[in-house]
Structures are given as C-alpha cells and as structure tokens.
Length: 127
Image 1: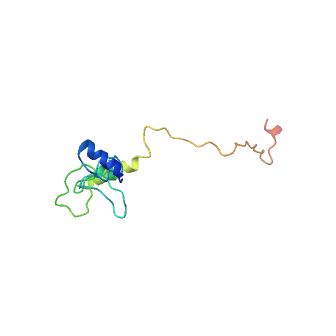
Image 2: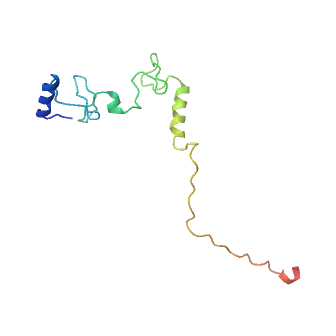
Image 3: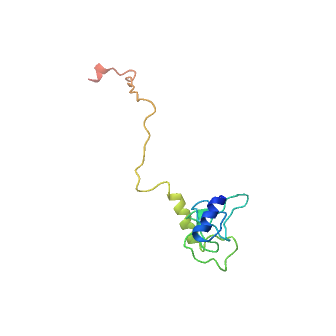
C-alpha cells in the first residue's frame, strides 16, 4: 500500500526512516525485501502475509516440514506416507466425526393409502 507524502514525513520525523510503502495485509513498513505476485500490484512483508499461515517454505515437505534435498524438483512431500496423510486431512475435513448427521425434512406430507382386500376373499368368510 502506498503511503502519502504526509505519512512518509511523519515516519521520518518519529523514527528516522523514510518509506513509501507498507504491507497490504499487516501494515508493516516495507524495506528492500518485498514479496509480490506476477501481474499483481500488491506487496507484502513476508510469505506468511502473502500466502497465509498454511503456506510452506520451498524445499520442505508440505506435511512434516522435512528437507526435500536430494529429491526431484517440484516434489511437495518427502514420502508416500506424508502425501497420503495430507490427502486424508483434506478428505476428512468436511465430514467431522464430532458433528451429528443432519437430515432433511420431508418435501411433502406423507399420505396413508388403504390396501384393498384381495379379490375372491371376503371379510365375512375369513372370520
């Protein structure tokens, strides 16, 4: 976020630093290192501000944060176990075991239909 000239001067008077921009998420004054995205004018102070808390550092496993040194480029997980663990997390999130199942109400009221007697059998002869 761009600071106005008045805000920049106030920062310089109070703290002795001259800055023109601050982080778009947390408002921290930006120094020479900035995190950006291609075709986006926003600037952030850190990877966490730009991508959120769930982001992981490059070169580390997405699940356990272990180093991926020696593995193929573009690898996200250190082992099949971590890959499966992450997939299970994302699949089980909507259906939590602690929540009760919700049932829908009936769309229309139930109608009770009488069953006619069998042909050839009369009620008086059965008694």
